[in-house]
Image 1 (cartoon, rainbow, N blue to C red):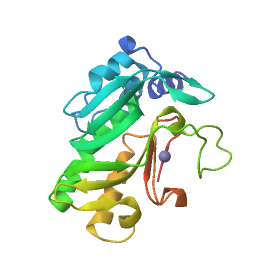
Image 2 (cartoon, rainbow, N blue to C red; image 1 turned 60 degrees about the vertical axis):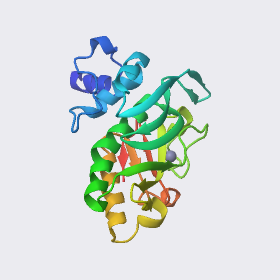
Image 3 (tube, helix red, strand yellow; image 1 turned 90 degrees about the vertical axis):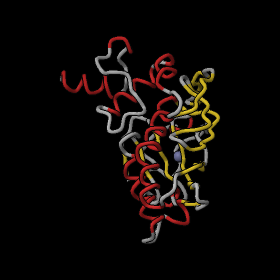
Length: 221
Ligand SMILES: [Zn+2]
């Protein structure tokens, strides 16, 4: 029982920051321990969020809360313009998703782009974060709002490299070329930072993007 209780406390980040035995997340450290729990803590505290989301790992500005009403709104959210060395422009995104995407970009996407294409990612294309809506294309027994309804999800659709090459989930996921290899590898690695990391293999609604969120469910495919 105690083990289960401790697991829930850490996983959902319900411990006050000052009581946590875990060191505050440092976005620049690759392969950080307990990264899921430590990202959850960042989501609980606006002060910790401000301390953790720092340049050059991410360019982020805190935005005012829009208290959740009827399942829609946000508490601890930021506006970002860059993450992990690439342009990524988002008006409203939860602190947890921002932290996750910065680590994923810096520690996985950029090194892999360099390895496979010999070029860095300069910008990331996305299909939005905040949307006050229910689940789309998920099993009907799953109740309620999408994580997008609390700005706690990001839909990534493509990448532009410094050498001008463009890679899109829709066009390049299938096949055996270097673009497909890149997409499959970075998508698999996103599971480390996000609770839900689903893409084209999950269902037809995700044929053109990766959906990454920091909700309570866990699902990677
Ligand atoms: Zn989504």
